[in-house]
Image (spheres, rainbow, N blue to C red):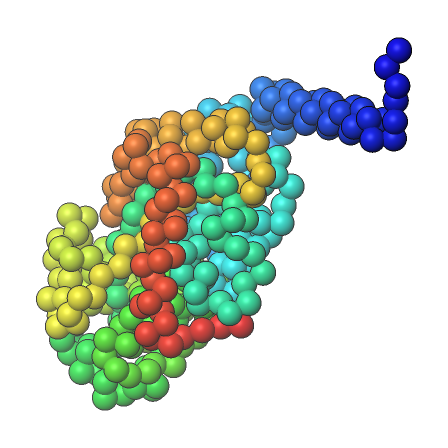
Length: 338
Ligand code: ASP
């Protein structure tokens, strides 16, 4: 008969424990699978980290409507504005990774990684990328009645009036903040900035004449420009836009190398089962081919990204590249927040 000693008993106990752990892991995998198969069984919250009525909100609501149809459950937009988008993003980073809380954010997801000294989450490791949505150009706008006639005059006006010029933005980390930061750094001057929880209310104040300037996505500005409610000085892309052909590029106005496009993407909290992410991604890709979404995006000066860019893998790599791209630019501008 085989004799047992303490060492072999220990090994046996370890083997039993390993089997139990393996079984536990298997149970977790099958629970994930079952959960993913049924998913979604209740409404999904889509957090937008800016106020309602702004450009990120507009993009998110269009996508949410179409995704609700494909997923057979309502995708409800919740606006969690503040701190340049980091409040809402932080809320999603800490949410249960079950597919019932997702985030639609923009370029600020990448720039916050450098802009914030103490970001309470890691943009690269605390989220699962679901997919890119769209690239949106920005426009530099002034209130009606502002003295400069065009971008060249605007540059001279900002240099002369410096902090007397009031520039609205959606807080440190927002796209409007980034645009203003690049403009001030290109002109070597400072304006007075007024932060809002999103550019929806900032646009209202520009139209009302309470602030002088705003740089914002065409998804929020095209209607106001066409209605003559604001002055458009320039677009932030290398070439003019099909949707606003009369507006020159900022480069034409004399601001060399001035270029930003605001991309939007969807995320789930880290640890969301891959099969759930795949379902969300499939619904997102369907939304990006939805004729209603395409037509509305076109009205707002943008279009959905191509299907091959709308994958979790491409989005993940793109986000990492964007963090790396903006890091030295932000460090050079020397703008940080706590
Ligand atoms: N466009 C805003 C920004 O400046 C955010 C928003 O309200 O969507 O980032």
